[in-house]
Image 1 (cartoon, rainbow, N blue to C red):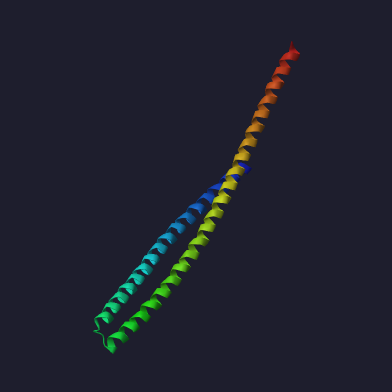
Image 2 (tube, rainbow, N blue to C red):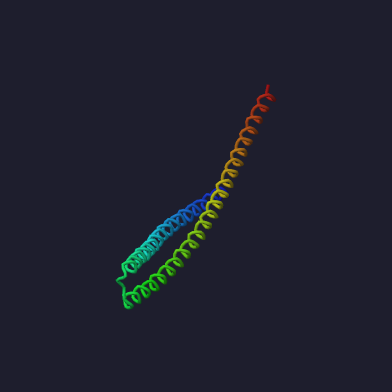
Length: 146
């Protein structure tokens, strides 16, 4: 197997790897979007509940049990928001790691593309040099016959 064929095979494998990583990055971005929207939803619920609680207190129509329920709910939603923020941060770090892997795959693919081009150029030069030698030989043979 020639060097050019080996480099072409490696280049083909690197292309597959690059495509797989691109798909993983897209999936991770989609997951991150879902988790961010879930976080935004929880934060919206929290804000709406605070507004409802403040309006209830402003009206003066609150008893101890209702206030206790609101505080318990605030605590619960607060914990949910914190957990969701941690999930989003994990997804962000996973996305960053996959993007770095994708960048590395791009670099490796580009490196093998350059190597492949160099091998092809070298083979073309060698072929041209061989042709030139043959032309020179034919010219000198004809010249010596005359």
